[in-house]
Structure formats: C-alpha cells, structure tokens
Amino acid sequence: MDRLKAGLENDDIILVDTTLRDGEQTAGVVFSNQEKIRIARMLAEIGVHQLEVGVPVMGGNEKACIKKIVGLGLDCSLMGWNRANIEDIKHSLDCGLDAVAISISTSDIHIEHKLRSSREQVMESMVKATEFAKKHGVYISVNAEDASRTEFDYLVKFALAAREAGADRLRYCDTIGTLEPFRTFEVVSRLIEETGMDIEMHTHNDFGMGTATAIAGVKAGARFVGVTVNGLGERAGNAALEEVAMALKFIFNKDQDLKTQMFRELCEYVARASGRILPPGKPIVGDNMFRHESGIHADGVMKFPGTYEIFSPDDVGLERQIVIGKHSGSKAIMLKFREYGIELTEEEATDLLPMIRRATVEIKRALFDKELVYIYEDFMHKKYEKGIDFSPINTD
Ligand code: MN
Image (tube, rainbow, N blue to C red):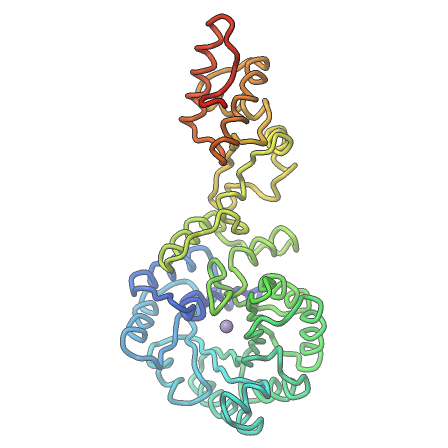
C-alpha cells in the first residue's frame, strides 16, 4: 500500500499487474499456489505498485492463496477482483486486501445480451457496491468492462457516479481489444477532461495493439496501466508488463525505477508456469533481442552497441550474442573465435567465411559453437595440406 501511496504522491505512472487474475483467466492456464506466491514476490521485488491477485469470491483454494499472499507483507498494494455486488466484496475484505476492483459491463451489447439488465440497474449495482467498499476504507477501482464499446455520455455518467460513491479511479477496459492508439488518445483525453478522474488503462491484444493502446492512454493522461507478465491474458492477452515498463522508460522518458534486470527471469518463470514457451522474437525479453547475425549489424554492435540496440542486455537480464550464420561477416567470425581463445587473422576469417556460409545453408540454421570449431579444425587441417580446396563437409 505504501508503494502505491508514494507513487501517487510522486506523480508516477502506476503499474497494476493482473497476471494472477486476467493472466490466469487465459484458457488453459492454471498456476499452482506456490507459483502464484513466487510470481507475487518477484513482482513486488521488481517494484510494481499494485497486484491484482485473484477473485476472492471463488473461495476454496483461490481465496486461501490470496490470504497467503496478503500474509507475505509485500511492499505493494494488493487488490481483489469483484463483481459489482456486496457479497463479492465481503470476500475481498475477508482476505485483508487493501484494494478492490469492482467490475461491471457498461456497453449496451454486454448489458443487453450478457447481463440482461439495463443501464440504470448497472449504475445502481455499481454505486451500492462502491459505497459498501468505501465504508470499509479500501482503495477502489471501478471497472467499466467493455468501456471501449460503451456510449461515451453514459460512460461519463457512470464514472461520475462512481466517484461520487467513493471510487478512487476508473478502469477503462478495452475488453475485446478493439481500440487503436489514435482513438484511445482522443477518448481518454475527453474522459479525463469531463470527469477529472484517475484512469487505468486495461487493454487487450486482439489486434496486436495492447501495449500501444495502453501507452496512448498514458499519453492522454491516464496514470494507471494494467499489465500482465508476457502479456498473458484472455484470448490474445493483455498489454505486457515488460513492454509497457521499458517503453515508458526508453521511449517516453518516464522511469518507474523498477528492477527491470529481473524481467527475463520473471518472464521465463511465468512462461514455464503458464505452460507457454517464450518466443525468441518476444519484445524486450526474447532470446533474439540481443542476438546479432548479419555482418553489418554484428559489426555495428561490436563497434558501438547503440547502433542496433536501444537498451543494454543487462537492463533486462539478457546477454548479447553474436550468432554465426548465413549472414555473418568476417569481423563477427573473428570475434566469435576470440571467445574460444583462437585469434584468427583477417585472411583466415575471409577464407573461413564461404565454408561457414555453405554449412549454414546446408543445415538451414545458425551454427552451434561445436560445429564452428569442427569447421575450423577441418580448415586448419586442409590449410597445411597441399592443393586442397576449402570446401565444407558433405559437398555436392
Ligand atoms: Mn481483461
């Protein structure tokens, strides 16, 4: 809770991680209690301000685990997710959480077809639930589910009623991920202008724009961003913690003072716990972020990393790697062999290059260290025998 307070006082952008709630709602994903606890610990250590840790009204194991997380005494605010009714909120209070999210759909399509209710009833349920939570002194986010498909005037009324009832912020949910950055900027700017409320962006990635729309909301004045590790979440997932945090720091110059060096470790852990591999091309933490193969890029990075890297591998717990493959140049080959303690002359590297290229095309991938050394041994062997050309293994 203190970290949340400090963040609010310092005008920080507040990250709200919902890996343990929206992330676990991903079809097919279940975390064990131990995994949940470990994830919560890591997120708190990294410095995330608020964690949405689950749905207390589910009871049983879910509620027991939430209580355990509360008992850890982590240096962050812990929030429970609730529908807009008093029963749900009682379960959150029972867990000792300091914050509640009170969620209800505001779009007509949801009100009519899912809730089979009316705008008036939605408003009434939200107000009653919010007033009840307020009486118990917890921090309150009122979540407008499907906000991005909600009629704007109704959304403004809903937000003002929420504030009147005691809400601390409004969660603007792009529940099905139909926002794009330009429209987000417009709508969120207007919403802030007309309500003066603190806004949390909760965006989904159905069109691959989860992070972009979250950031567009921040640019429009939203101070809270809902995120999940690896962008885990319903369907195509949510805005990713590691992407939002690094974009805020390196593109928008808004450093949240997080231990970003732990990102790779955290993302790998959550990938394993959710039974999904971390794709090599995953922004920020994928293996390929700091792997360079093409001759021009490898040469640039060796001379000055800033030529092809926007931040340092240390910043996210990765390592730079020069990969020797079809597109490698002789400079990269020299550097690679130096890693093995072999100093090649430029001439040797130039002679080795066609052999390496042929080998990579033959096996259709980059070479392992061992394979490179075999090619080198083959090369040296032939070099000291007369009249033999430099063709690689299995020539056609
Ligand atoms: Mn969601």
